[in-house]
Length: 288
Length: 287
Image 1 (cartoon, helix red, strand yellow):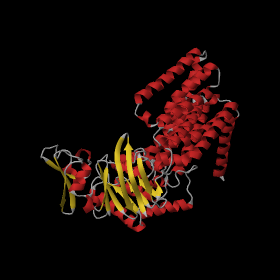
Image 2 (cartoon, one colour; image 1 turned 90 degrees about the vertical axis):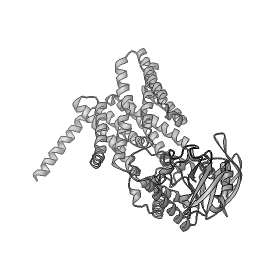
Image 3 (cartoon, each protein chain N blue to C red; image 1 turned 30 degrees about the horizontal axis):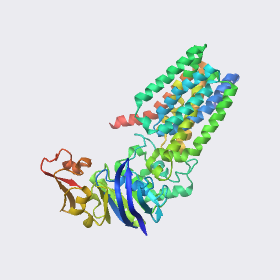
Image 4 (cartoon, rainbow over the protein chains, first blue to last red; image 1 turned 180 degrees about the vertical axis):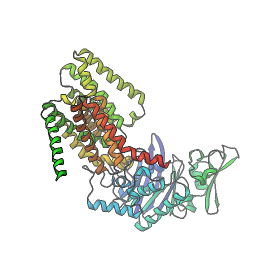
């Protein structure tokens, strides 16, 4: 069975068409990296799979059923942690636990079975101890670990992880990717993992779903990260350079994703905005 | 033997002290009203602080002032004017939601206008000064038996409503995007919660007045969140702190003849400072 089936799907966001007439199938048990510049529709696609965005055309099937809100078989990790006020003393445990039957009315008092389910999820990511600490006092990498545990509550068969690497340094990025890969293998589930650049995901993902220009390309890294495919998705000529096991995407003339890119962590400082202005050297190098 | 005797004497002293206080009807009413309101305010306040909506409590109180003075003007009990106005404003705020968040100038003007309108209503009413002071700063010692029953009914209703929505409300407060994906309506619970906050504000205004609603709704809740990192302990702790502060404030008012609202607010501030102090000091030492 396919985990996700898109049949001629168009998605609109605020009057703008983000995806136009996409058809593709993602097989179960795949670790899929979702890439593309900001605004390409990575988050919108995930929200559509969750049933939060209704396609303007076409149909989305998730694990054999039409995409619908509140599907317990789908775990989701939103991109930003916006709601919790700064400096909160609330424990990670309470935060993670809020998802357990969180839609049901009543007092937030959990039964033994639910508590065991939460402990299991925390154990899977090795965060049982971490969860006792207040949420405001843990690092970004530790927080991603807890959020990952939260997605595992309810034993989903499909995980949608929206930019789990954002604002992490390269070391912690690698940790998160390895953890997700291990979970994906151990639990035999399907994972969609969106990211700004492919390099941290190399070696872990089975397939790439690359979005851009309202279009999408799905396949193994070598088939998708190529000049012709990316040129089509960016709408401008793109060259792909492989160097020491890393992949760089080069675009001549004007940039397609440079301005939208967020280079974070010391490892990427050299590629910051000051390093290469528009057209200063005729071409520039960007991480995909 | 000696120690035992001293203890007994001390207990007797204390009990006569409370007996003196409870000889008066108005003191019994005050304690009953304070108990009801404190338990409600402490519980609701916990979620208000957690959601970062403390300003809503303040805003609703200001708007409630207009309702209360309007009610006085047309000859009904101020409590009902408060309840009506705060409920209407609370539900409206819930529906407007995030669109309100970034409009502080507009909100500030509306709040100032609400207070000014209340002032105008009082201007048309003859017993101006006392009524204004009572509405602005509360006077729990003036609460009568029928008001206590009204507070009890409204308080029970609000607390029941909070209990029913608390689980999805907590989820929606901590992880809105995820809650939405799991089928929780953010708007529905936002509106229902602000309706509960509105009722709580109206109740609090009876005890500490519209200007000092913060003392009962925010103080104990913020202190509780400093003291524990668990929701299931935090909510009862917040209610207990509110209860102790309200009882303590009334008792101190009885023996000092200072206003009860002053004492309740002072205790609320003191408890928060004590709760927050150890961590602040530790942070300073580390820095």
